[in-house]
Image (cartoon, rainbow, N blue to C red):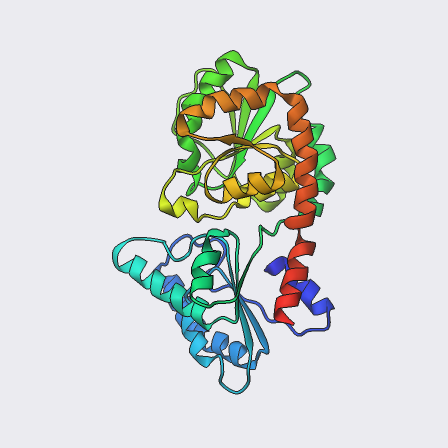
Length: 324
């Protein structure tokens, strides 16, 4: 939401924004819990003063829904991409589901990334809409010409991925297939978001790049192919697809598991090399690496789809319509 605050202010609104969890935090520590507790009165005060509230991802503010009708009729929108209701197991999972139920029941409108949620929310009588993304298409396209110029002069195909150490296990099962492909095809691989991987490659030349925002915008458009893997679990079927949106915005064709949100996106956009089953990754990767003409066509179609359906401009139009 941070990238849209100035835009909202430019519409003549007074906007206050804050993180519940600091962006760099991966787990709740004593210091994070203390920060959360001492900031609660401030969040409640801003909530009570606001005419409209947009809450993204977090369920930790669900108790504020009890204050929704205090003083005035404020409009609350809950926006999430990952399946925040399924995190953890045991007690943590039960608490997540309780928070999710409270947040969705108390919101005037819910924005989801994965359309799989629309049926459940509709059956509960909750107003909801689906939006892929958003992603800063313009910024990726501004970086694309310089990024493409860094590609090898030979026929080497750069297969890339962007993520984090926490999501690396999704693509780790592909390492043997990528190494085998490198034995017979001129390919290289770049992983953004990790400093190293626990795999001994015989043929594949691998580059690891720790994540920062500038580098992601600079490097992703240099990919010839992007990777997106789902493991077939129930949680995966409801996951968001931030990586796919980044690839499309950057003009990068991709190879993706034909499941969940990836299936829906490929069907709607006509972009992407789909992998029907886990044992077909090597075959599909080989097909994608060999077909430069189809990759080029998918690159252009992906950017067009991203501008229309994934962009900041499209998201702002939706948010404006819902909030106002």
